[in-house]
Length: 217
Image 1: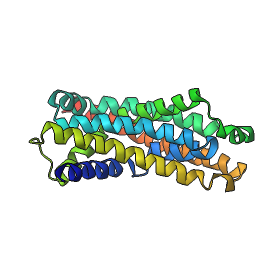
Image 2: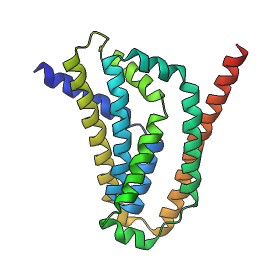
Image 3: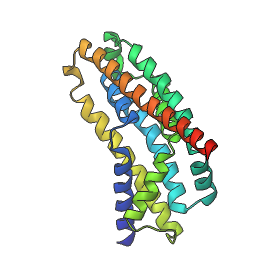
């Protein structure tokens, strides 16, 4: 019974980390609409693997990794911001093709791999994820005295929760994708590109201002 409770806590943690709308959520929605649910889910699964990685660091209390991530947070923000801007420009300029939507039933594994790697990279370069895990762990009353088995169970739950969210999101969006016109898909690309660019600029701005403040202090 105790193990089931711990697993459920991990699932809730995974959903809580994955669910807020952010860059990965926007990409998952857009790619599902344009390329089908497999592509959207692959993008989300990249984020789920990164969430699981950060969840494991928080659950097992790997102090060396925690110190490295927090000590280089500003650098990660800048790298992540540049990556986001690149993705934003590509998304904004991309024009949806009707034949791509027809071919979505037979997804290209190379395209899915690219979506997976994008989701993985964007999440790994966001050290705020692990800070969110630490804060939520504290809210759940999960401290450093967590046993190895319980920690592993929570990490498994985080993966299940995060992956389940991305599956539900991609399948839900796929259910309505055929009702969206080519023109609206093009508008979605522009709006998503602008939103991703905003996230990227925010990351770059906070990263650079943080470095300047640290240098002056």
